[in-house]
Image 1 (cartoon, rainbow, N blue to C red):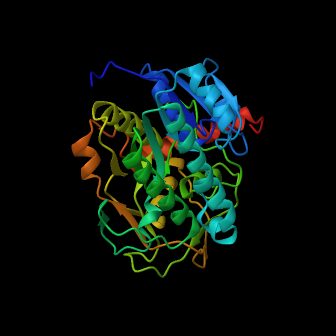
Image 2 (cartoon, rainbow, N blue to C red):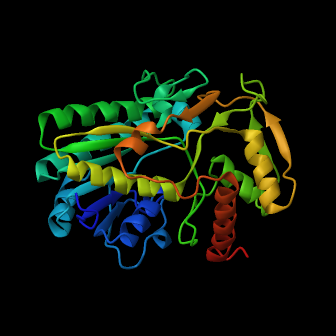
Image 3 (spheres, rainbow, N blue to C red):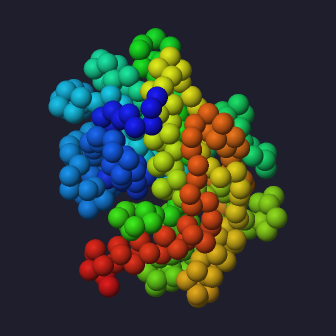
Length: 337
């Protein structure tokens, strides 16, 4: 495919954290883009004014059929869903509904409308409790919580659908998404978010009185969990490169990890926030959270080899700086400053 070629893309959950960054990346690169979001967790201010927005449920097949017709949709980037691991343990049916059943309905609507390309927001959580090593896409799928299982089930639905119908797909298994748009157009805006860097920058700006460290007895160098933290704008660009790959190879589907291939512990992340914010964050040690694992680090060699993806922000302090910049702007948006 010529890199100048584009097609109309529908972004589900486009008012959310990752989805809004995908919308910005698509729009910046000249792709026609539209959004569907039920605004249960998303924010209208995260979507540029010139992007068409449909308020509704991704399982509403009549609405989807209208959107596909009005927008001439040729690709779907599917971000809508529930994402909190401990909550999935407490409310598994919510996760199987939002992440699996509704995804199945969306895939069916895409097949019925002849939409040829589908990119799915999956997760490294599908790997379960792996050994402490970089994970490849060929490692076993062994989810240990309903969140991971709900995503793994949708991966299988996509695989079976691509085998049976004229639709190809990319499964992108994210590692720990963080940071914010470098131009501060969007960022993590959810009140009460559980993402470590989000929590830490809120604490740095006085919005929280401490940062909880969940578990200090993992089999890792400092006892805290190791995660592969990836800047959300790099993740968004990975979606565009994955879509280009699908368009250029219409008979092929791909499953790819999206991470940097390096892990940082909870304490290392907090040290980075201390440095960038120029203050020492209060830390409170607590027990492990249900569903958490010791280490999740990617082997990203497949996406590097099979697409033109080149990360631009693979630096922890840069990630923290962008997150802090967004948190300050978010305070202005909400009238907190």
